[in-house]
Structures are given as structure tokens and as C-alpha cells.
Image 1 (cartoon, rainbow, N blue to C red):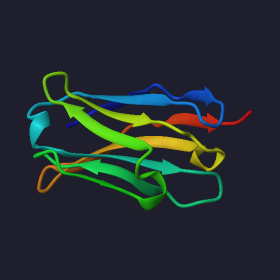
Image 2: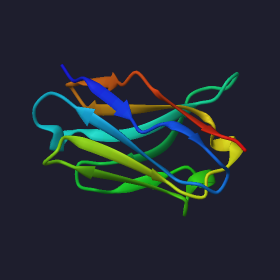
Image 3: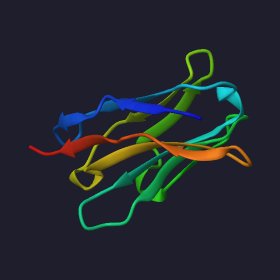
Length: 116
């Protein structure tokens, strides 16, 4: 069983920055693929960024060059550094962990609002 707890969301002006954190419980954190998803009102949840156990990353096109995903296996934590935020980045952001044969887990979500 894995529990994920996100933090770091909030209200920020356009052009600002936020760093989301997701702390995970459970063992062998380094073996899990980790991701950040988001869901805006009236829209489907979408993958924003993902980092594999060996550190490879992928991003959706709309956040490339602005967001950075990273992991600290010694702290069982995954981060999402968000810069140059835009109103269209407003959403609830969810942390995800996946390991084939072991499960797929979600955090409770953290709200990010980009507005004047």
C-alpha cells in the first residue's frame, strides 16, 4: 500500500511560480514511476509530467520549458516545479505512483489557481 500526500498548491499571479511536493509512504519508493496529473473544471484528468525509476521524464507540450518534475528517493518525495504560470494551468493537481504488478495510487489533490 502506498499513500501519497500533496502540498504546495495555492493562488499565484500569472507569470509566477509554485513548487508542488508529494510525499509517499511505503517501501521501495525508488522502484515506482511517478507522475503529476491535473484536472480542470469540466475537463478530463490529464498527465502533466512523469518521471521513471531511472529518471527519464516526459511532459505534455503545454508545460515544456516551464515545468520540471524531479524526485528525491532519499525523502520519498516527488516535486513539480512550475514557472511562468498561466491561467490555463489552473486545476487540481494529483500525484500518482505506479509500479507494474504492485498498484496504481493517487493523492488527494492540491488546488493550483493562477489569477490576477
